Image (cartoon, rainbow, N blue to C red; front, side):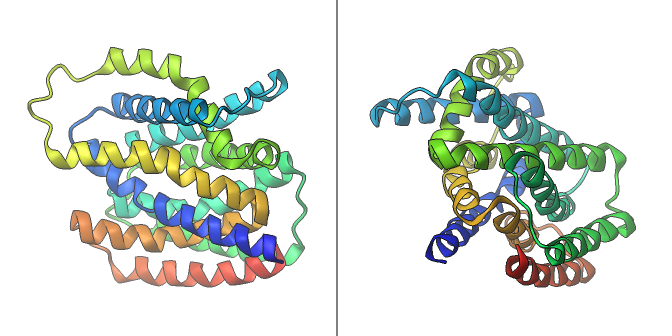
Length: 286
């Protein structure tokens, strides 16, 4: 029980950190292209991770782990950041955050497929209820809907769920921060090439908020958050702890309203409040 509680506490810390990712990305794409933002944040985080691995003299992963690390990199280093950056050119941060409510279901499904977990039937009822609330709201929300934004968000959720489940499975052997660090290092060469190829022609028009957004997604969203998140998934279970992501829309909506001044209509808050109730039930039967 102590191990499980530690996992949930660590997972919650990761969710709090991740909640700032989409608002920060929304700000950053105001000055950087999605491709450059995706590659630059990965390069910065990879350099920090490489320094950490060298400083603590971590042993290189086995050759058999490289495929799984590449899957992690595809899901959380490339796929999710790039697709969300593309989506945020067409939808508000508040709307995109609602799609995060689908991420727990995606994570749980890949936890069963890749992690060998078998939650109780009641768990799936709560998980599906939370996902249905979010998906239903997204489908009925009129003015903010945009296929150019919604489709990339759905693809991002699928890739991210795969990356979370695969990383959690590896974390049981390698450790949480080691998994994201090695995945970042593995992705450094192609990401560095992409960053150089898509760098802005001039930096004169990029203001302080855009640089702060890049700094946040590079350090916290890409590295620090995963230290807590993968540890939480490994200790508390992929499917169960993954349901904490249902809280992320609520935290993200507050940030979007406070930092970006985006309107947050009451139906969005009501849906989020109902979704939060699903977390308690999912945790009980995970």
